[in-house]
View 1 (cartoon, rainbow, N blue to C red):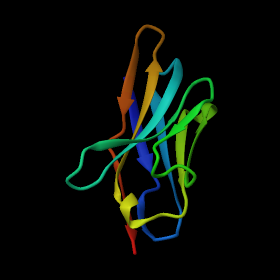
View 2 (view 1 turned 135 degrees about the horizontal axis):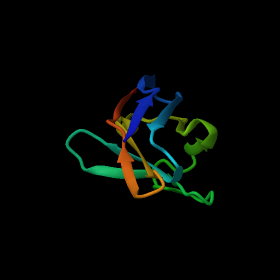
View 3 (view 1 turned 120 degrees about the vertical axis):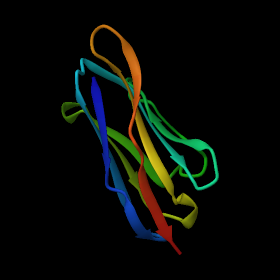
View 4 (view 1 turned 90 degrees about the vertical axis):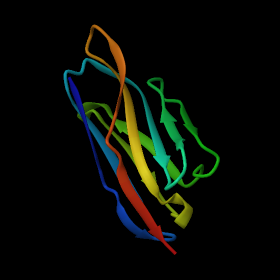
Length: 119
């Protein structure tokens, strides 16, 4: 089984920065694509950023230019560096990783971490 643990969320002021981390542990053979999503109160979960195994990055329109997704393969960890934060960035942020244990390939999700940006 695989466990996902997110960290780094909390309260920030508008214009500030936060870095989210998401670490995977357990029965991991290889990690492929990584993604961040977020869900604001009363809204659906929305795509934020993707980093593929080949190194391609994709971003949603809103955070593009302000957020950067990255990975540390040696630590099975992904990051989301968030800069110039805006109140509309307030949401629960979720990570997911596409992981194989050598037999099957699945997408695993973190539990979510709160980010609150005050104006």
